[in-house]
Length: 242
Image (cartoon, rainbow, N blue to C red):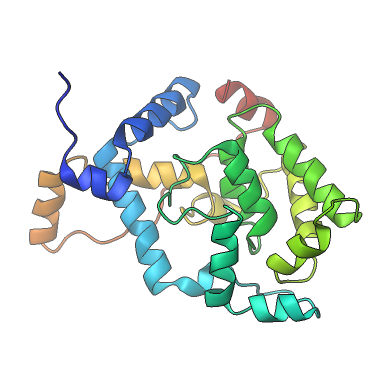
């Protein structure tokens, strides 16, 4: 009989067995040189909660474009009002901050319904890259919103609030499919932006609760910057993800 997972794994990761299976698939595909263990991933999820609580301005806001002029977009620009609609659409999963518990369908919906600023698309693109055909599906749906043929185009535009969101998404996924990482070297090393950088950050953390507590007692632990992640060509990205 398999031992029960520690209480903190169930609290932070919710489904540690599913998370471990996802990490095993990532290891088999050699997505990153070193795959974190479950404790290290817990620290990564806590880092994301830290971002939500103390750096909320980095999520769901836009630095380049104004809200659309429709009354719905202006109303939904207030994030507390936007959140319930994103939950109803199943476009966000607050319990799954890493994305490793989410289906590819939910990740696609997240991209279509929830605003991503700058190159923040990259995290979800790297998640979807592991399943053939998913990025092409994002491209096709984004194109249908941009050209107006999507039956819910107006609502999706308003839910994402800001002007040109779906145009930016379409351009980004086309560039990514063409082999462009979208990110500068600094962005490729940022766990807020890159899934691979997130995994690399996690793998660099103390690998057991005991070692983490020892560093905490010594005053030597804080959330460090992610480690540089080498850029992959499209061919190597495809081969590394199966």
